Length: 399
Image 1 (spheres, rainbow, N blue to C red):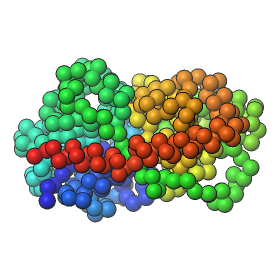
Image 2 (cartoon, one colour; image 1 turned 90 degrees about the vertical axis):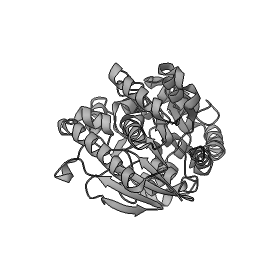
Image 3 (spheres, rainbow, N blue to C red; image 1 turned 45 degrees about the horizontal axis):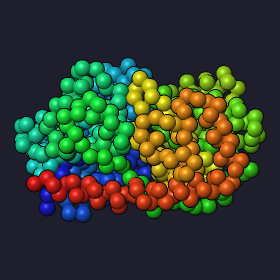
Image 4 (cartoon, one colour; image 1 turned 45 degrees about the vertical axis):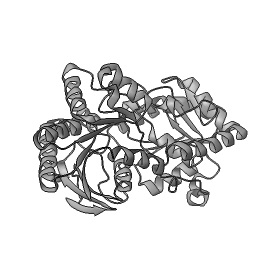
C-alpha cells in the first residue's frame, strides 16, 4: 500500500472543529487504497497525534507555551500576521517547525508522493523534500497562497514550487487564470479540480423548530472567516435599505477573527440594528444555519489580502437548498449562473446587494427556482464523490 504525505496549514484541530475541513474531507476519501499521513500545525488543546477518520494526523507545535500559538487557524495566517504582533513574530518559528515536521515524517514513512496544500509554504517545503529525497509532488493552490502574494520574492518561491511539482491543481478557473498570467510556461501541469461538498451532510432539512427565537424573521446569513476580503462591511451597510423594505429581516454573521470588532463598529456607526454576530460553529451546526436562512450572501471583494479563490460556503449553502448571492469576483462568478442558481452583484455595490436580497426575500418563485437549481448544480459538479475520483485518477499517475 502506497503512503501519501499530506502537508496543510489549515486542518481540523479536533472532531467537530469549526476550522474548514476540505483537506480532511478529500484526504479521508483518498484513503481507500493508500496510507494517508497528514502534517498540520498544532493549536491549543489539539492532540499532537491522532487517528482522525482513516488518516494519521501529526501536529507540530511552533511556539511555547503552546496556548500562545497565534499564527495558524482563526482568521487565517495572512490576516493573523497583519493584525497580531505576536503572530507576526511567530512566522520564522512556524516555517522552521513546518519544514522540520514534514522532513521528519518523509524520512520516517518514505511516502510515494507528497500532496502539498497551498503553494506557500507547503509547496516550497515539498519541493525541498523532492530535491533531497526524490519524492514526487502534487501541489494544490487554494487562492490565499497566490492572489495576495505578488511581489518578486513570493513569485520566485511560487516558481520554485511549480518547477518541482509533477502536477498543480487549482480550485477554480479564476485561480487558474491568475496562475497562468504569472507563469504561462507551466500550463501543461495545471489542472482545475475544486474542493467539494459533502452532499449527504449539506442537504435540505426543516430546522425551524430548533430556532424558535428567530420565528417570523427573514434570515440573511453570512458564514466564514472575518477579514476585509470577505466584504462583510458592505453587507452590513446594505442592511439599512433591506430593513427599510423588509422590517423583519435579520442578518446573522457567523465567524471569528480580529476584524469582527471593526465590523461591529461599522454596524453601530451605520445604525444597523437587525444584526447578530455569532461565533464560528462546527459543521453540523452550520448545516442547520444554512437551512434556517432565507438567503446566504458571500459579498467578497478583491483586497490587499487577495480575493475569493473558490467560495466553498456558497456551494454548501446551495446544497442545503438555500438561495445564494455572491459578488462578481474571483471564483464566485464561475459558481453562480446569474438568475439561475443564484444572483451575482458587483463587488462593493451596497445598493445592488440590498436589492438582490430584497428580490429573493420578496419573490417566492425566484427563491424556489434558485434553491432547486442550486441543489442540482452542486450534485452534478461538486460532490466529494466526484471530486475525489478526479484526485484519485491524478494520484494514480504518480509512479
